[in-house]
Image (tube, rainbow, N blue to C red; front, top):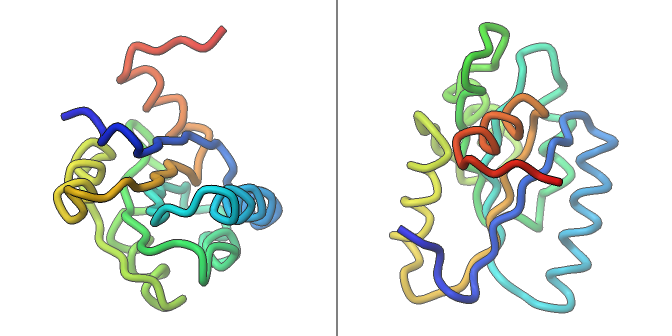
Amino acid sequence: RPLNTGSELWLDGGHNPAAGRVLAAALADMEERHPKPLFLICGMLANKDAAGFLENFQGLATAVHTVPVPGEASGLPADRLAATARKLGFQSIAHDNAATAIAIIQNERPDHDVRIVICGSLYLAGAILKQSDYIPR
């Protein structure tokens, strides 16, 4: 189903602590100007510093929904990534894919505009673009 009219969906390929800092700073600026609950949908490779990436969003993200990186044998299982997020104090649940995560976020907040950011892996970003048939120019 489509997002609520005032909701936002962002896609970012950042996957390391430095990228997390930059993304979190940009989202904090957006939150200051146009407040909306922030939900991360995150998928990462197993060789990345998941805790170092996610800790940048403490106090900013309402929840972290985790997903596998499609087609990547070296992907971090979504349930392990969710456990890492919970250790950092986030509400977190693992899903099979980003579409399911988006639907659940919207079902939990049907009358509220939200900001959803899919992040954590360039491979995840590429898979999302491919699944959506969107080719950036």
